[in-house]
Image (spheres, rainbow, N blue to C red):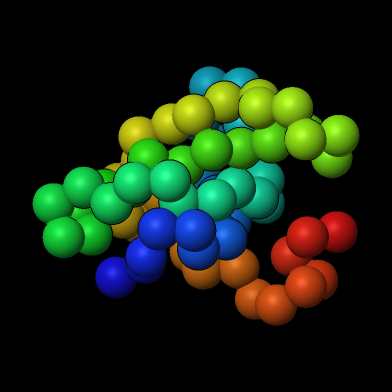
Length: 67
């Protein structure tokens, strides 16, 4: 299960986003069954907030995921 504030990577396309986009978990639903994830631009502007199933995202691996 992912925790709030965990950086994640999208693994499937959703409207307005593509696999590989990086976001941050802002809320955990149902003990990790789904996550509310905020995706931001490099300038810090919110691009999208999505409710995603657990299989739609994976934990980011270290600082390289921020690039």
